[in-house]
Length: 102
Image (cartoon, rainbow, N blue to C red; front, top):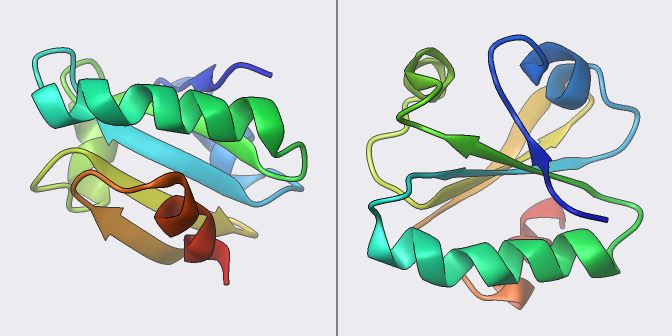
């Protein structure tokens, strides 16, 4: 399943009210490391049905990026029951990103 694209209208429903753990990739189109991380995030979305995977473009939704203190991208945040449980700043491997839920 493809990653869900987040915006101001669907963030609460897709992330904070999700019944599954959620992995959110904070990225931007101009960011080289983000472009390298994109396929890794999509691979997780396609292979991990127990995790919801979402992408948030920090240029399109700066309010949410600011709320979660995103200072560098890519940043991936793991949410469980609407709360932040872990984060990875910078390019991360599939294993590193999945380990955010451990």
